[in-house]
Image 1: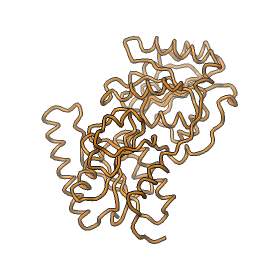
Image 2: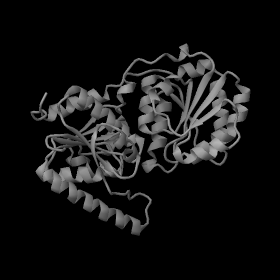
Image 3: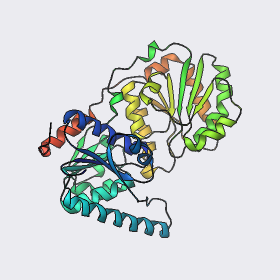
Image 4: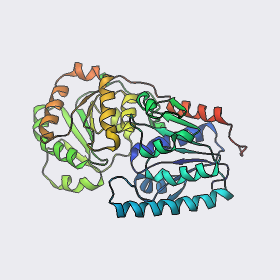
Length: 361
């Protein structure tokens, strides 16, 4: 599975997993015969989605370190060491061409094994604040691909290249302009990621009054699997639809006139591509406060309004949503599509470093 392959590793959340998928899709299109494989963790989004995909993959028993008790952190370190040893044994016999890591604790075993064996590895950091793993491994990486310019000064001594954040193949197309959308206008709420409970509860509280005030609007609310049943069972407005997960995010964003969301880097990149205005609520306590930094960057580019999570989230969020929904000119000013060339730039850099091995066409 691994001999001569291009290995992608990253996961835990969609912000780490989906850029890896986007890069893998680009590599498969560019080099149809090149073996491509994924390495991830037995928990996290990759454990659910990789078995449903056609990608060759291996899932390892590893856990994260952040926010753990000393005992749990020690257990996580032992699991990481065991997973790394397992990959070392395999890759000594089946050596990959290169390894590309997109972050998350699930990427640690593969990247550490690649470093130990002298296998070229590349890192992609989507956020304005680098993760712990990227900071640890950046100096010896063949390249660090940065989603935002702000991260480069924080990785001194690393070979950094600004590329943006890769988006999945479904987003690499032309999107309907915001101005062509007809009523009912859709407020799309993406509450299905880590830390979604407060956002879900705030939206449930504000939705009835908001939808009564704006009869030409409807609300599609992705809750995440954990928050779905409670909201599904609770009374809600007839135009407030809840779903646990949205499969075709490109189509859902295209149909939206406003997107209410956290501010993960992948979501920011997808919003830029499809040119949809955003109302962002950064997740408090994100590593390095990267979500707040991402949201500020989007607001600074004139693409989003930002609401910080506080004691009366429903009230402040409702006021911000009313301002946007009542003002089509303001919404239009936040809707500026931007082409995404991140995949091409990353793969071009990969070839600059070294051509792929010979493989069947």
